[in-house]
Image 1: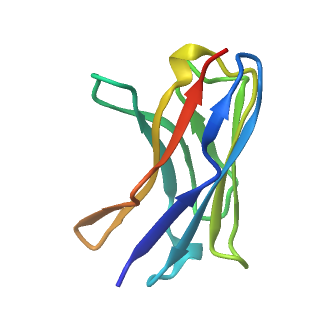
Image 2: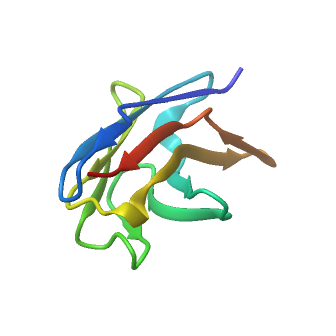
Length: 116
């Protein structure tokens, strides 16, 4: 069974930082690309960042470029997202996700709230 379990969210002041983690199990994590998506209150899903299986290539949405950093540890089957210089527009539920063999998989999410 594919499992993706996010953690690391919380309440942070504007300008603050958080590090999100996603523990993966039930599949060969090291051979699949991964991504982070988020959903702000009342809005649809937004792809925030993605990373190839080796970590050699990454993608960032324009809204987070220069502030967020995606990484992965294939030995630990874990995906990370470092969030810096957070602002209120970054508030939302953050999910890690992947897709293979015709299926799409997403965790239960971790809440990030940016507020003073």
